[in-house]
Length: 254
Image (cartoon, rainbow, N blue to C red):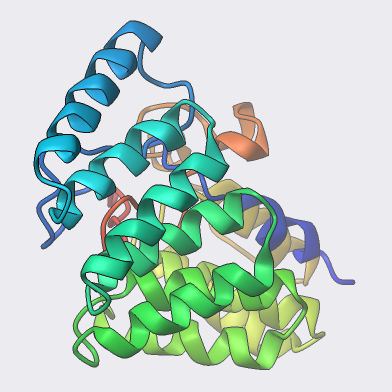
């Protein structure tokens, strides 16, 4: 494996650590990092949704909300069950399949996650949303199916060419495959388009590949949340896909 082989498998984490504005409204529902909300609040929410589903058993959105709370409580089996109920009531809702894939992925069930992400991709208008493609690309990369993963991230670039994060993942995969020129091209594009979350990592890899880089101002080496990437553990890096069906944009250099 090449320089970036660990970066793509570590930095492309499941857990969202930043909010994102999506085209899908998810009122009172959260698929945030498990354990992020106080347990008392989660229990209150769960009782509320369970009481309502008892009154309205055919409301698929209630099962979806229950699944979100169960996910935050780290009750992943229960979250899968609730999402499965939602899908049984509304099988053509891409959002339900997308989040079911996320729960499976969090549990390490890659085949199940891939299946759900592929369904989400099929149900979404082509070229409109990137989250399902990015999620599918991640699962394929986890299975070392790199050519297929590259194809999914290329679709993300086609749909949202202004988001630099896809060029980071493209470059990482090409580095794993030993494609030096493609690695350099994608990483340089990432830097040129103002990518911040992986900037320190990208500059390190490019320098190792023999690319001369100009010095940057100290503030340009910092991520969007004001914390130096080099000072944060890998698992805390921003994920490539958020809680909705779009990938959150990185904070560009001011």
